[in-house]
Image (cartoon, rainbow, N blue to C red; front, side, top):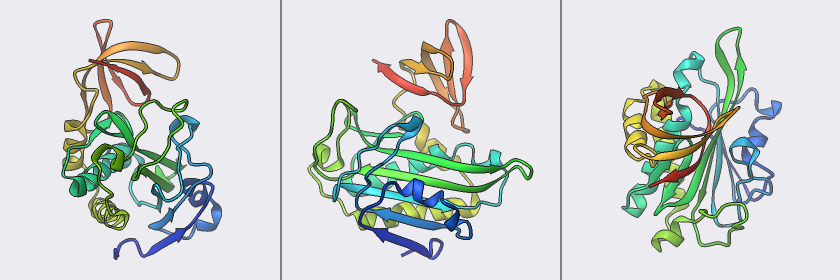
Length: 245
């Protein structure tokens, strides 16, 4: 399928593809792809559950060992979100949105999420490894709306049963090109142009505070530029809890 990702393994069921690829048994592997038909303990950011129903989505993780400084990949989550959105759009022929920092939306419903985890080698200022997790709700299914009121699937929102195989191929092809040159400019343009929060008032959870603010823009590094109480701030991490019209 892809000359860059030569190790691609499919399994029917697993706890979590990200959790699996973080294990030491994969330490000698690079560019390793694990795809599951079902996750019993699918995970999202901040320890949340990512519902991964059987035969209903794409649950894929990629383990890489990039030989670049940590700062080069500080916007990797944004790049992968843009790649995922573009790959979905190729099949549905409809615009897909992104909510800072890692959620993919269609018709104001969340259809996908990105979870990037890493082990740092601070002595060399590089990564021992990175695991890129991509979860996409593809087909009609029941969601537990006590977990998320906005969860939906591509099929529910479009009436289309898109090809999982074509989606995998498109994502891996785009990601392989990026990982060979680390040129994120075009992907960051796509990420920023699709973002739901720019120009909106939001409720933002930071590590030590919950604030209401206005979003001015997103930088090429994936940082959120906000106006909070007439002070301009640049936010590197956090969670958008609510977006106001």
